[in-house]
Amino acid sequence: MTLAYAPSAPVGITALSEVMERLGLRMNFAKDEEIFCQDEEADLTYLVVSGAVRTTRLLSDGRRQVGSFYYPGDLVGLETGEIHRFSAEALSDSLLLVVKRSALKAFAGDEAVDRAIWEATRRELERTQEHLLVLGRKTACEKVASFLMDLAEREGGEQISLPMGRQDMADYLGLTIETVSRMLTQLQGASVVEFDGCRRFRVKRWDALERLAE
Amino acid sequence: MTLAYAPSAPVGITALSEVMERLGLRMNFAKDEEIFCQDEEADLTYLVVSGAVRTTRLLSDGRRQVGSFYYPGDLVGLETGEIHRFSAEALSDSLLLVVKRSALKAFAGDEAVDRAIWEATRRELERTQEHLLVLGRKTACEKVASFLMDLAEREGGEQISLPMGRQDMADYLGLTIETVSRMLTQLQGASVVEFDGCRRFRVKRWDALERLAE
DNA sequence: CGCTGGATTGAGTCCGGTCAAGCCTTGTGG
DNA sequence: CCACAAGGCTTGACCGGACTCAATCCAGCG
Image 1 (cartoon, protein in one colour):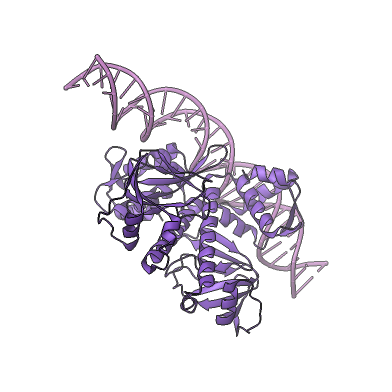
Image 2 (cartoon, rainbow over the protein chains, first blue to last red):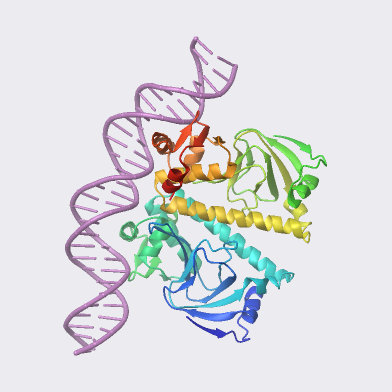
């Protein structure tokens, strides 16, 4: 991990990222490098600038649940109280803006910052609730289909790229890599999506994908 | 549903419930009565006074996911943004305090109220994240064991009562009633818990339950 | 005391997991 | 530029845990 003081460069889009730009450090994380750790004290907040991040939770016997994936513009690390309930790792080489919670809290009263944090937390809760439904009540095929749809909607281009590997998808969806792989093959066989390598795809029949995702 | 203006009686424990006591209406809901509905506009917040509440989410083909259960003292209905993503129903005859969000927002600036709402949201997120792990990575037996443990910890007496039926448990855990029932029988056979009727149990071997819940 | 709806139990099936082999992709070094 | 190695992905065969369907049991209640 390397770090450097944030220059006062004007990159910020929202009020929050401006504040973080001002108060925070820029930190680079290599692929798979740990950003913070489950059960560790949570006194930092992170803003993804480039790259991507996953949060994970381990069971004692090694089973893993991926909580969420974060992209540029997303806030990581406010999902919890005093202690992180998830670990976070970089999916690929990533640049994050890091700021102390206490420093951020000093800006409480700054209406815009408060609201931005509140909004981020609300979105986090909503995404987690959506995730619940997928894990609890969808079949393997529906899980994979909804996952691809989420990605496609988020990126919103023709070619969608998968920043994560099959194991991360599997652990996000509560499946095994083998099942994920089979479902992807199946979706491709049905001409719903088309893969170009295993990290890029495009949606061929949007309606079919939507239907399969339920 | 019947309703009555809240008397200014001093029941409130926290600042929030005092404010809700002052601003809100008392409403009675019968067992299984709908409190609010999925996709409906969310302009009310609810505080459980007595009874219990479940939140649910339906898939188009009728599959159901229970999001959470709420007990006296819990806030229901701030899980979301403008639109409810879950429905809420009374598990049994229940008394709730209801207040308009806008009215509550008028108390923004009242530090204590703000913080209470923030705290409730944070707890909600934490519980949902815990739920994720259960749904994604635990076996049927582990799911049921963790559920019983949660209940037992929450109530914290000798005899624990189950305010919900088997179907609600199943839909909370992503299982079928048959599987839930089998696991309960199994746990009882292993002398981990003991049921007195199907709505009351007590933990006989706490360590075993903890181990089974992972 | 019987009725009714929820809970339990059983038999059989199937979806997704496990284990193992083989295939790409990607990166490295000759 | 190619050869090769290594890790990740795919595919196949088989297995088992959870689901389905159906019968029965039981608790709560009129």
